[in-house]
Amino acid sequence: MEKSRDPELEQKLERLYEREFIHKFPYHDCYKLQKLHPRIAHALVPDLDVYFSFIAGYGSSATTLHQRPKAELRAALPKLKRSFYEACPKYKRLAKYITDTETPALFHDLEVSDRLRLGLANLIAEFL
Image 1 (cartoon, rainbow, N blue to C red):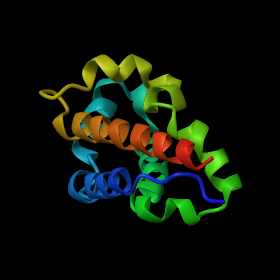
Image 2 (cartoon, one colour):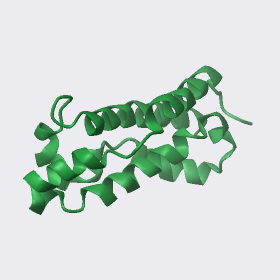
Image 3 (cartoon, rainbow, N blue to C red):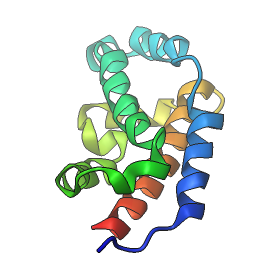
């Protein structure tokens, strides 16, 4: 028997993904951080790309997540519960430089990724 679904939340998350998460990668802001902190931020772009891609993979299909295998959802849940700084702790020292005025695109993307991943984690938890 399928556990309860929240179609409204599913649609809300998919719309959030479509409206605020699909756009150009924040290269400019990442390069700015790499210039300021080369030792810390040298791999920021690929690490962010992996992190954002994982969230996007679930956000883009929020309305059909209930059809995925439970084992896959169980494996994804802990990853979706982690912020970027929890997933990649070496970047915690950069957090104070990632602001809406200094790195607005990256700041926005991290904020949206948090809203999206937490919503997806709640949604997936309902299915399990």
